[in-house]
Length: 128
Image (cartoon, rainbow, N blue to C red; front, side, top):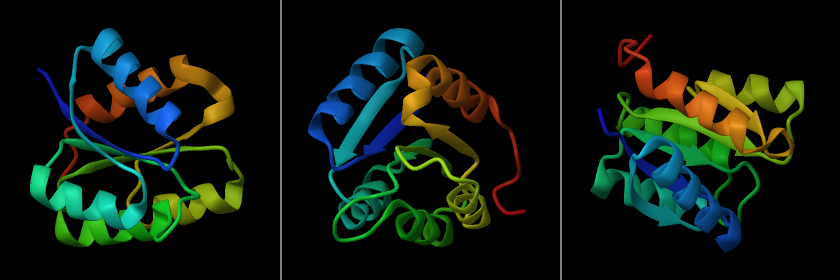
């Protein structure tokens, strides 16, 4: 089943790379992109993606704040954080707001694709 994915990252190169990887490797549809957390929340509410990929460090609103808002408004959306700051403290904060997968950018695209496949096949209840 094809999933729709929203990419929320302030780096245009990373957004383009993720788009290409997801469309080629998983054959999923990228329904939109946003360059900060506030744009990402607005885009998600309009586009209703199955999965949102969030960066942590972004202008206007960071990925944790955006994830919190997304889970309040759209508890069914699956959230994955793809970050350059993979510390245990940040991962704990991310999971506390509903992020299901936490992938370090340094782990590369194979780790991201694997996590996306796991999140995409998840059938968990909308609210725990």
